[in-house]
Image 1 (spheres, rainbow, N blue to C red):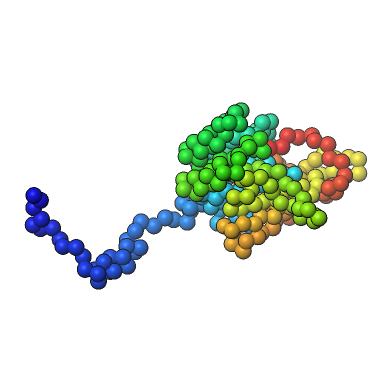
Image 2: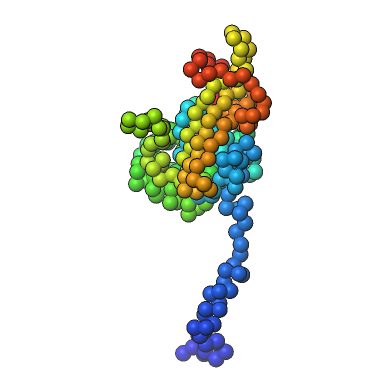
Length: 259
């Protein structure tokens, strides 16, 4: 038999209501900075509050991989660990110039297709951010579970996916299972390289147009133009520095590696 002497009786309905009202006031607060990962200043117009923890981002377009790297650069420099999966031929020098701290990056490659979902689940559990290259194929059901797991763990999941043209339109969108479950979608298209004159000069930077939209974005849609990379290799707003831009249809020989 238990001795119930000294044990407080069950609270009355009024006391329970008072406790429920008091609970949010004394519960430990989660700072906004802890709910996001920092981004580079040049990306502030797109993500003024930073990368939401637990978000899944689908990035597509001709400059999608470079933009995906730039998204995680500031977080890696602030101490976050980043895992990279399914990105053979990753341009490490270009990634470092974009600001990624390579000492905080772990590469998992190659990964047999049959174990990609299990591998990604383990990485989501152990890393602050996971970058998926286009070679990391995730089936539809696995994509939904992976996105849910990322939300639960607070891990940012960035997937580079292939764009497609909607039937009968010129509108581009991202396709694939991860794009279907993504909280945010970014289309990043190169507008041309700067630094070249008429038959002289050298490539000094690439302008890109970025369209970002999604349910976890204030206003649902944002647009920006960036140097990606800029003349020094880093990301910069398109207004500075000013370079003459070679048109998107002009030939631009690949003279440097890109992330």
